[in-house]
Length: 144
Image 1 (tube, rainbow, N blue to C red):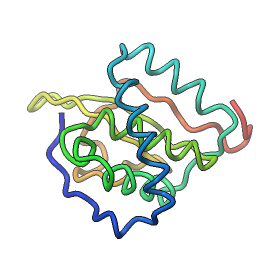
Image 2 (tube, rainbow, N blue to C red):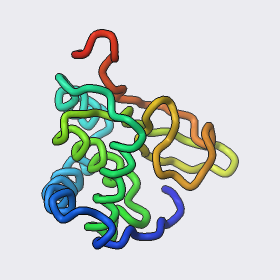
Image 3 (tube, one colour):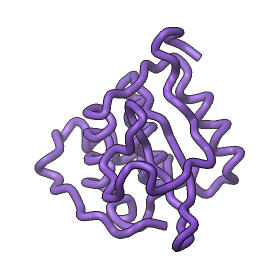
């Protein structure tokens, strides 16, 4: 789906955050095996009551997920993006969770974004065209 990512050294991520990331990565692996419609439904339900994640919060969660999982550090973009969103949710926030494609050459990818920009991704904004998004709750409404 995407190019392999360099792993984040575990010592660069606080122990408490790494400890929270381990079960979240396991849950994300189970969710990643579901059909896209089901993943969207689950994530939409889980995000309720969260506030929008900042880019810093989403990046910290992504780094923790990558630090505890080889799969998430490499080609596992779907699991990585789900785990990142879930870890954010454990901390009371929610990034935009996205899946999309690129046509030349064809590639599919999953990622999270905050403030309309991909978080921790090696490619520039707009590289992938989003097809499915579970957006952060509205800042005005506070809850969705």
